[in-house]
Length: 95
Image (cartoon, rainbow, N blue to C red; front, side, top):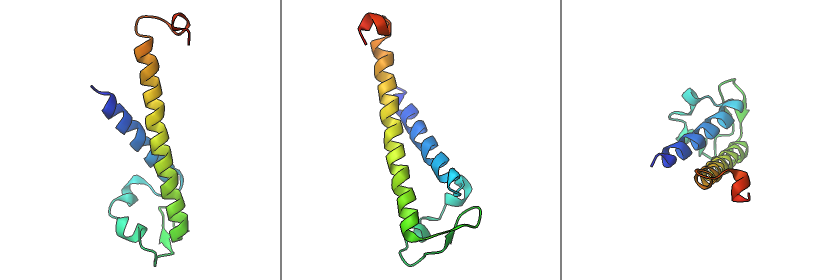
């Protein structure tokens, strides 16, 4: 059903929040991939003008990957609880 769309929305929301909090607004992310992955560019500026080295960018990217995955897992946990408690409450389920 619709759970896949909810998971995707949660994942992308988390990704864009983390990137935005670190200075890379959604509008600056479009078309930045070639510069982002270039080992030779160690002065890539974010939306505030802060310069990022390659290793700093990769650390931020891996943080986003982790948060994306965790947000999907949390949505799956919520879906599990919702499905198990459709007819019986948490207490009646023994959870």
